[in-house]
Length: 395
Ligand code: USQ
Picture (cartoon, rainbow, N blue to C red):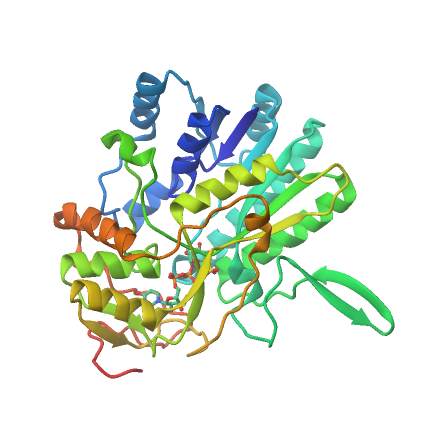
């Protein structure tokens, strides 16, 4: 089976590429390497010394014998190249990782809002258009987010994509209402509409993975050679909460809890994330089936509980910072996650061993940390304060 991974050089894309290649799939990558250029733009480089994509792939060939072709272009702009690459490779599956993935980055300025909207929505629409124009039967798998649901607790668990409703006497299922909390999340909501439409109109087989916050940085494959090391983002824009806290514990920075730390979010370990993508390939929607939606998350945690756990294990200091985002101070989050369990996922849950493993990776590279990049300088609305110091009092 041939899998084309669009965005195969990124934090989730690169481990998935190796995982699928190792599992015997033929794999190719399309990536415009934009994530590496954003490192330059922000001056915010990963903690780990990642190698060039060329080096990654040539070592992979030496070690496994597998050739992974790579094509460098921007799928949001270069439609003709995208179409001809799909026609040339004739993939059975396309995995779409090629979107800007950071909420704070998308909120930095009007430039970043416009870039995130135009890139993400055009990338998704171009991929769908090219599948239709190619006439090939391709299963599209997309990395979406649990953030499309918002983080509210309406008194019932958030379902996997579709909500049962009763209109008058008629019972039906609709897409769960969307409550995006950033421009980045708005683009993922728009993706859902594009999937709904192309699936209905063109019968494209689509799986949309509503992924939670990924923690961890390594998989069996990334650990098998220094050249395969994965990126470990820790900065204010691209670092996500749990990995940031673990890195902060490693470098002796206070844990940056926003507000009261009462926000509850859904999480998944990187190793489960790549397993889920393989399971999605192995369990495609049937011809004519509506868009398949999986909640790709294994557990939920409150931010302050994570911080306290890390403080207790590693002796880190907790500080509270003015929340740079507009979000509820506190929320419950009950979210269904049966679809992946039904097809065989055995979830990795948060445990001290894995937390220690991440801190030890962060400690190994702590000299590469630029502490001035830890505090987020992106705020949700003009005039909101950038809190550089934090305090011991909840905000
Ligand atoms: N937070 C802190 N301190 C920090 C960083 C974050 O308290 O230093 C808080 C935030 O205020 C927020 C929560 O932790 O309430 C999560 O923030 P995050 O930066 O870890 O995650 P977020 O920006 O919500 O987005 C991330 C990924 C995105 C993915 C999403 C999944 O960047 O690609 O879609 O997680 S979800 O949470 O389901 O939307």
